[in-house]
Length: 153
Image 1: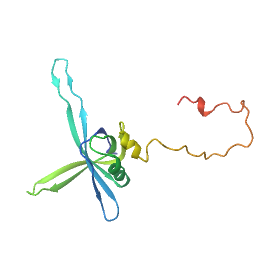
Image 2: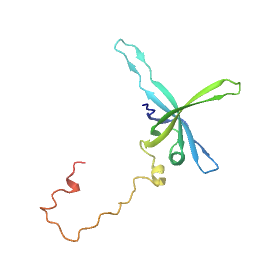
Image 3: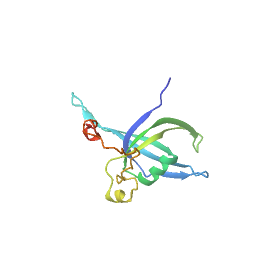
Image 4: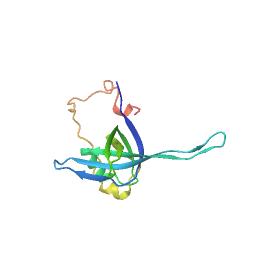
């Protein structure tokens, strides 16, 4: 058995590059910076911050979400898997590229007022209509022991 799973939280390093194919599929590429904070060791040694840069690839629906809402500086949560590929550069030298193919993207942090006003998925959701039929006979308090309001979560 093997597992190829990556979880990253970081800041987008550049605006996403979007490409569309003839079949309508979209792909987005951008870089993501993750930083481990520096510290001072017990013996006084200073360990500086360490920033790693990751190449992120999003396909189809995630690509369209990223195209609309992700830009340089956006903090995101990414779940996906590592993929490597090779190519020969202009001098014929074999190069290796490591990319994170994202399965999940979540936008983190606060949005600006302009983004909140323009975002159709913002927290302005309408209450969903109830799918459970309404009881035609009233229930007595003794039979209705627990309600959703009594739950601690």
